[in-house]
Length: 286
Image (cartoon, rainbow, N blue to C red; front, side, top):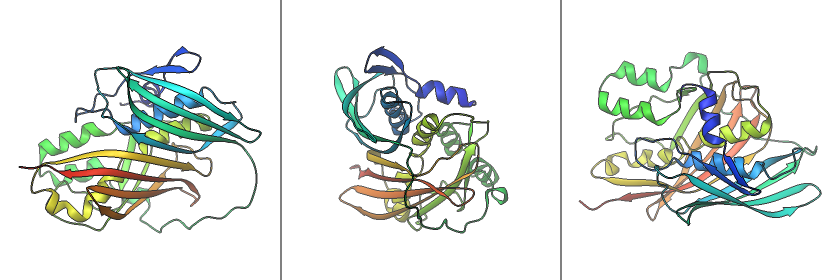
């Protein structure tokens, strides 16, 4: 996806009935529907059923089955509650009559109140960093792996890792990962669409962070990776045309699951969103 409109078109669903919507799939190189796509599309579906003056403050999704790239996804929205300040929705995604994903999301009126946050980490600013693709081009060690990596992310979003990026599987690293990102094009959109775009991008890097301390072990044979769940909390307004810092770490991995969390800051140091995810990291028998 070279242009932001292509990403928006992917997220935007076709309305089939009052609370039912249908979406198409980005054709991934790994053969399953990308989790960030389902998150963003489900959030889009929920947003179509809430008052225009209410915005998402949290969502919690569970990936039930791997999505089939060749089939459209149907999203059904349940109207759980419309309160004075909060609105609650449940979204279930289906393919061939089977639920592949479900999500609960909560929306709130814009309201004032107490305000505090953790400070943004003091990392190298994006202007002094190479993009992920530029780093790999400089290394020029594995053209096949580079081409696979290039197909994973939308071209319109620029990613600049703080740490040195490598595709090698034999070097363990701390369970921390940080990168700056922004849209290469202007994004003069409302907060609802900013939320949906961020939901899509938020799935990049979280599960990978949980694998970093185990790259030697996991690189010894085939390993199956997939997201189990994903949560996002939206704290403050932001714009994707400005640099955002995604700071991730993984406090734990056990029982074939890796747990990761992330905090997203804008360039001024405001904490705009937080994420958490657990993913399956299952080594396959030889």
